Length: 89
Image (cartoon, rainbow, N blue to C red):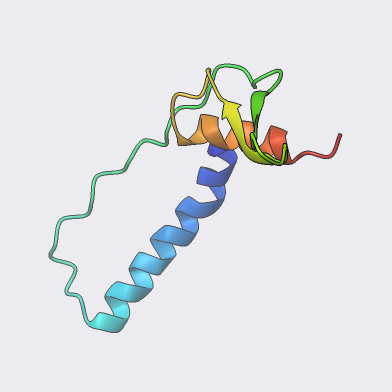
């Protein structure tokens, strides 16, 4: 999914930079920034999300939900887990 986002947002970002340079009167003499590599994503999508509910000792209500994203190595991996959590079952 990170590659798809990069394909969508890279041209938008370049256009924003071009328009900002044009509107601020940039002479274009500044060196162009080096392209950044998009973050890597997990090799395969996570199959399941493991979590643990923390209950209040007094009222027994759920006070926290811990999500274990063991295979997430970067922001893209965490986004994959977040998508799995939010998917309707």
